[in-house]
Image (cartoon, rainbow, N blue to C red):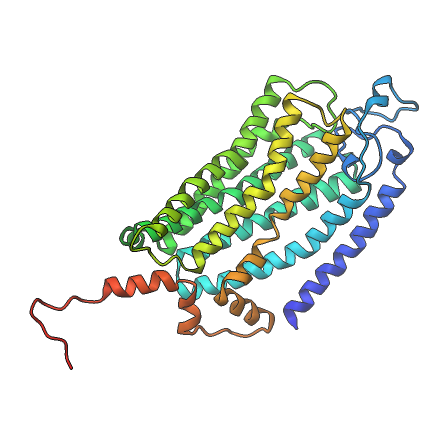
Length: 382
């Protein structure tokens, strides 16, 4: 009951936070219609105006405040993100422990890549949902130093980029394993996987630095500047267009190789990869479209429909950080066994069946290729 007890303690820790968020939001000055703190974003949670940044409380509304978009979701995002955090963090921690055990048992690069994806999802949940949304927005109403706001924004983007780009080496590894198996045996091993993951994380951290100057589209009634346009297009390229292009090309090559005679055994690993990349493409597409629409057509500050679409698209995008556990459980028998061992606090001694089932297709091909050939003219024993 040790691991279950830890999860229960985490849940008990978040329940008072949720109550605190409700009380703070209910008794916040924003509910009375006054302006919020500088660069506030609490409009996504409470039925108050989507105001422009101001440094002090005002007694009456400005003329432009009459045109501000209203949040029609009320407290739903607060509840949604709190539940997502309470469920997603323990589930991802459980996933990381299970994948760590499988990586130690099998010494396969695949599990290191999956572990990197899980770790990046945890960082995204902590920085984007917990720090950026719940603490800064709901508790403090972004009434914190501007330097801290910009720094957290850069950290949020870095974690977001890491969560998405950690899937790219996994996709490349599966493509090489199926389409170039001999090369895969030479280049796919834990040490190389760890170096690749470190490079991806470092580049993700660097890619978050320019977003220190990210403009808060919730608060700015002015049209986007040239810098805003550059950052927005850089953002959607990094988080959607470029990785989705890589996924589309490599997955198409994998499917094409599977259709060619004689088809290579795809196995459940490839099915899991296709599911991960497809779910990502679907969940992040609405947010990408809304961000570009906001840039060229309509402001979130002015149009409540764009405001609503942006709220919902953010909620869908963050859902992507908590769904991989269920995909792994559905597809992988070894992963289910590892999770069972962790929950029951068992050592989980590896078995031949559990180690090889996730790699069933690749292992069969490896055994066939590694079988020594009989010399010409040799007769098989009776």
